[in-house]
Length: 211
Image (tube, rainbow, N blue to C red; front, side, top):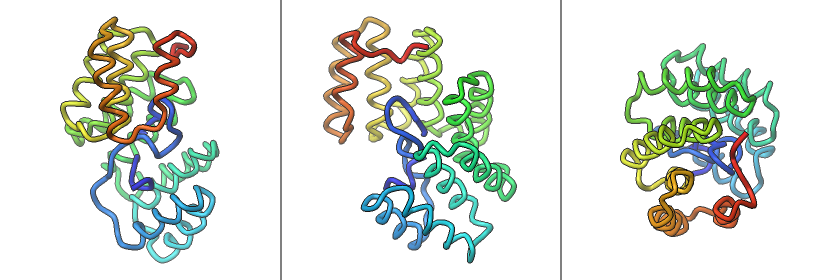
């Protein structure tokens, strides 16, 4: 479900909330908003989320999702305000913490981003999407061995997220492991990853995720 996907990324090519896996707890109302998001996009979803939050203002997950939707529209100030509201309600909301990390990564504030990811992992050590987001930062900083370490941790925690699999493929690529890269690329495609063309451009050198 797209609105439940928190990314994380963000991770490589997907904007805003479309880059991490389901958060694991949603109401039927949020599920209905998810369908609106898929059919009509983030603007329509934001309208519905704001309506939802009028009646349930203490739903930290809804605030986090709202922030992710704003990230999809590159409205980063509004995204940050939504995440801060989520964390006022639930300071241990690792989804909002990770999303703040994504926002900092997009702003080029890598040390701050990593601090958020590490905080999220301290709360939930099995949150694969945080490791996958850390993969992206390490690749941007040309710390390829570390990137592969993070990518493997993410994959071992969640083998079903297509973005996690795609990030592992890219980490293999930058570590010169073409056979494993290609294997993960096939797997990402099987799982529904829609940016295979961009992966291929990275492999050919036409694109880079380096800074």
